[in-house]
Image (cartoon, rainbow, N blue to C red; front, side):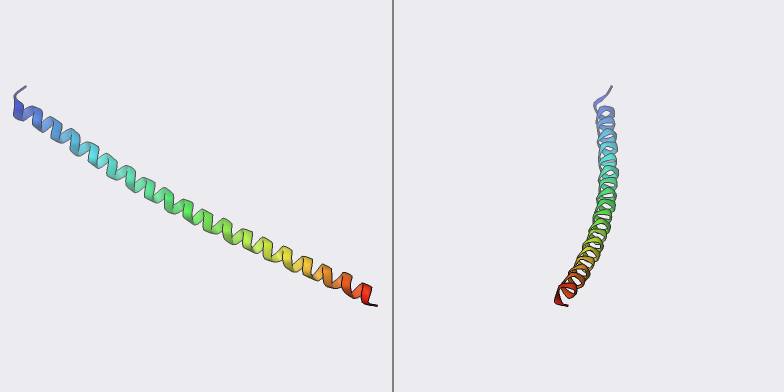
Amino acid sequence: MPLPAIARVIDAAYRAYRANQAIENTRTAAELAQLASEIAERKANIKRVLHTTIETMAREIEVKSSTFAV
């Protein structure tokens, strides 16, 4: 194989490698964005659960306190 042909093969292989890397980077970025979205959703859900739990406990304490105040 003459040298220019080898150079073209190497160049084509390198370009294919870089294109594949770009695709992988894009896929990774998309997966990270999805993960960030899921984390934000879970955080909001946990916040709602904690808020509801605290409100319920506060009402329960009020009821018990008013029972003892009589």
